[in-house]
Each structure stands twice: as structure tokens, then as C-alpha cells.
Image 1: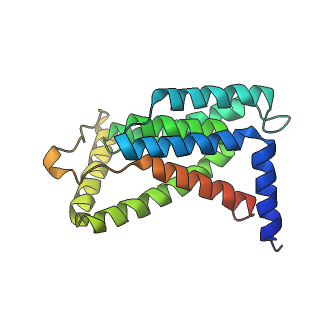
Image 2: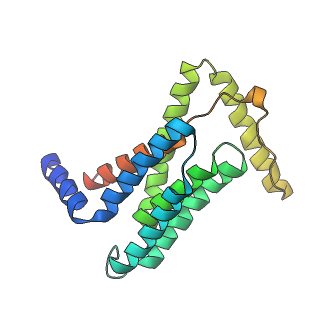
Image 3: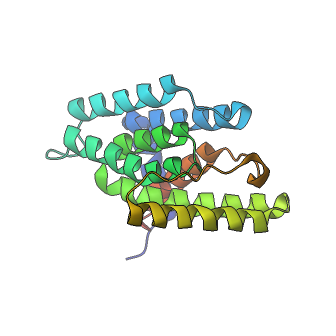
Amino acid sequence: MAVNHLDAFFELLRMLLSDPRYSILFTLLVLASVSDCRTYRIPNWLTLGGTAFALAYSVVVPFSPRLGFGWALGGMALGLCFMLPLYVLGVMGAGDVKLMAMVGAFLGLYSTLYAVLFVFAFGGVAALVYGLWTHSLLRMAGNARRAVQSLILSTIGGFRPGAVMPPAASIGRMPYAVSISLGTLAYVLANQLGYA
């Protein structure tokens, strides 16, 4: 079935104007990205306040007659579960984890799964570009290898990984909120156009 892109665009515009869930989500993502780019921090008032709004909104205006608060709570938990191992490994900040949990609360369980895949794709491309730009691609690959090894060994051994990279091994900081924002926006657009 062919997708009429103009109709899909107007449908997306109608959705943004009629349902504040997406308008507020995109506004919060822009604010988080700006804050992360400027200070490498995402404020708790933004992530926790956004999550509280999304959960409360899902009670008042559920995703569908059968999918309300539990669906939003499941999306929040899924976003948290996907990002938490990266935080434990020391490759992602706590603000990024909370931001993805907030996105999950806005999108619900099913959509969060796909949004996370889009976020990881954008994050991978951003990391590759950053590594090439700073001439640190080999160090980045070494850091990734050590993080994966630590995760595997900690899973087998049943202990908390100690994979925080020493300062000399670090390639710098990357504002991951931008990848979360772009990945989420790309998923919503792809979904609206019938590609996801």
C-alpha cells in the first residue's frame, strides 16, 4: 500500500496540535538536548517532571480504551531497562537513562521498543562521526571492547562491573540527549509515514 507523504505530514501536524502528548514530548526533548550540549547535564525537573506528566496524562487520556497507565508505565520501565546497563558500565550518564525512561512513558510499551532501536542507531552514527572527527576511533573501539568484556564477565561472575574508564582512556563526552531526541523524533515520523 503506497503512503501519501503529504497526507502523512498533515496527519502528523494534526496529531501534534490535537494531542499535547507529542508536542510536550518534543519540547522536553529539545530542552534536554540544549541542556546536555551546553552543560552535559539533563535536569531532574525535566526528566522526572516529564515522566510524571506522561504517566498522569495516560490516566486521563489513554493511548486507547484498553491501554492507559499500565502501558505508559511499561514504556517507562522498558526505556529504563534498555539504558540502565550502559549507565552501570559507565558509558552513559544517569540523565540519559532518565530521559529514555521519560520517552517511554510518553510513547508506551510497544513504541518504546522501536524508539530505543532508532536511538541506538542515531547514537552509533553520532559516536562514529565523533570518533572520526576527534581521531579517536581506535580508542573508542578499545573502550567499547572493554565495556562488553566487563559486562560479559560480570554476568558470568554475578558481580557489578567496574568498567568506569580511566581519564586517559576517555575520548571525551558526547551529549547523548541529542541522539535520544533525534531517534525518538525519527521513530515517530517513520511510524506516522507507515515505515515503522
